Amino acid sequence: MILPHTSLENFHFPVMLDEVIKICKPENGGDFIDCTFGGGGYSEEILKYPNTKVIAFDRDIITKPLAERLKNKYSDRFNFHNEKFGNIDKVLNNNFKADIIIFDLGLSNFQLNDLERGFSFNSTGRIDMGMGLSSISAEHVVNNFDDLSLKKIIKILGEEKEASKIVRNILKTRKVKKITRVTDLVEIIKRSKKKDFKKKINICTKTFQALRIFVNKEITELIDGIAKATKHLKFGGKIIIVSFHSLEDKIVKHYFQNYSAGRPNPSRYFPQKAIEDNNLFEKYKNRILKPTASEIKKNPASRSAKLRFAIRNKRQFFNPSLLKLKFNKYIEIENLYA
Image (cartoon, rainbow, N blue to C red):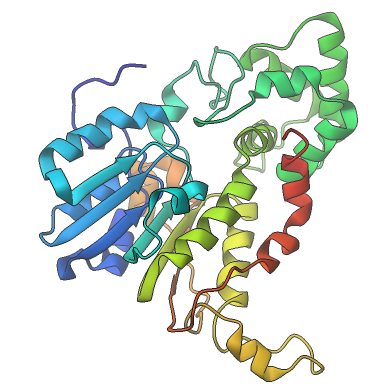
């Protein structure tokens, strides 16, 4: 896909931009990491302030022309890496520390609107769903995985209660023909589920979400990314995460709550000192920011966004390994395809 030569704002609406900038305070200058560059909205807004520098990451090669425009405009104040944010430690110098690190876990508008990539229910293209640097497609999954694996993917990663019916119809269909187009998958889901007019979300949402998460290993990537990012955060620095579905938010909330100072002791038999020593953030207030009504009207895709942020304390970094154990059942599913 070739991007037209128009402004960045025409490609993507950066979700909750005003709220992110208010938390970032770029007017004070500093070093910023944009872990999900996308349409470049956060990076561009930050770079408008003098004495700011941004290092940006994105796994999708389609974002490179957008990044090049910012590079041409801001020169050595901006650097871009076509890399997964889970590999942030492979790019950054071990001693580099940022003031602010930002994650926007949603799809960019140009990804959704590229009908050949299969993210949208309205697509007529193949069932791909790869965000970039992915080793498998959703088409391969629905045509080759056994019923048990498909049920796990759709039920657990998509939180889809009717996964069994959907998988049953996937298996029936692929005995007759290969499932290659988004329209094929949409038709299968419609045959499997009754439309609930009380619910606002499309009946295909959860299945598409599950396949996209699996193809891109989004849970593994998120856990690796936020842990490694914390290692590169200055004392007093902020990590800001905008999530879009309940599983993402559950991971972010757990991470901030369970690795922050002042959290309650989970057991009277657990040493209080161990609780006090085992944290990476200042006391977490569990405050969730959501898009305003006016933003949702302008950008309906933002309606499910939740913004959380935490402040790094002065304790030495350690690997929060228990985070992976907590969400291991999701990681095991993503590892069905190594």
